[in-house]
Length: 251
Length: 88
Image (cartoon, rainbow over all chains, first blue to last red; front, top):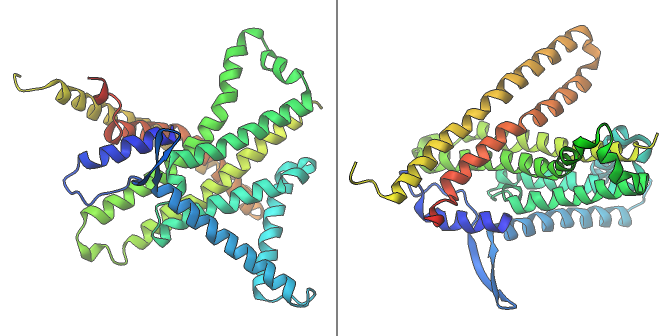
């Protein structure tokens, strides 16, 4: 669905129904690639995801270099910050998942860092990679796989009969409920980010120059920082809650 | 009414549908306001737990926001990625 939406938005970008063609919030096709007879495109989202990944990896390698270089018992500036971050993320995961936390700290901390930096990259002039449904659907599908794996690992075969639990007639509703989890997770993150992107594109595209300097600070502070931070927190908390729910099912 | 083409009719329907879809934003507005009211009352009763109450309230509000966002996504799809035009 991500590629379908990117397809249509890039095609529809030329028939924008607004007065001014400077309003441009869609992801564009940058370069065609021919693979096995099909033509796929390199899009804006690929580039912005790559930039976000490079930033995170650079920070991580820099922190590792700092830790390896100095005396480990005397932490300096960067190491302090990294230790605070790791303790905070570890505390969030343990506080929510309790005794099931150990295998999941790495995954949840990684998606929190990735989603937070992706969401706030609008402040730095990028179109957030999470404003593309492909990115958020991929993250939600990884969570879905983890949830079902936890269910099967905890309940073995009863994970499927539990879907018929209260009354067998609820079986289709429970199945739809299972599939609604990644759908709602991805659409929540995507909708918040695309709303911010559309608002900022409208603001920058349609208004005269003197309201585009200084005043958009508040819009960026709301859409990028506040909304971005809350959506990462919500995505991580819901992931942890669903996984813990499946793992506690046999008590 | 002689000048309205089929494509114009589809676009008109899509535009009206997009406007109607965003009416779904009423629900989260009311629900999140009620949740904020309960959160404020809880802080009033127990000012020391302000951080946890705020986290719980924001989590609940962001989950409640989802259905309003479904309406926004449908409206955006109808306006900018219209699948009905291709079926004419």
